[in-house]
Image 1: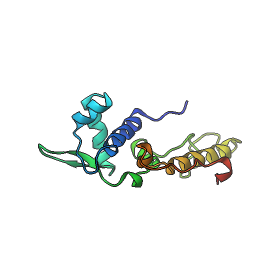
Image 2: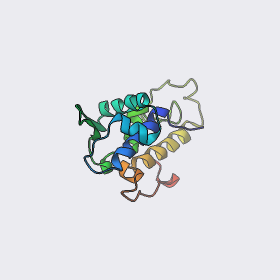
Image 3: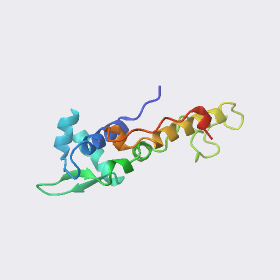
Length: 150
């Protein structure tokens, strides 16, 4: 089964919550925890990583909180996922930057090229989805087809 890590899933959830609110509004970890039904400790860990990765900005103080670092249409889901869990790769050899030798059978594997093609499709599809799409502020681009794969 292909599945995002909880960190990526929760990170996207936090970004969607912030993006769905009024532009520039601040959200505390407690507010985000309440809205997502997640523990404050979990939310705090996720938003700190989102701040470090440049998706959220943190303001300290009694009226502090978190807000988006840039507009939702400028935040791609492929970038969020890569920042929270590393490069998108269906298999060890699928990522375009994979090291030769990352798999014991890659030199003779008949599935290597198809996996790389499928991985490119997935990355391409994710590259066309922004945070704005996730909150319904924009129309998502059509998903690529196998004919669009490199």
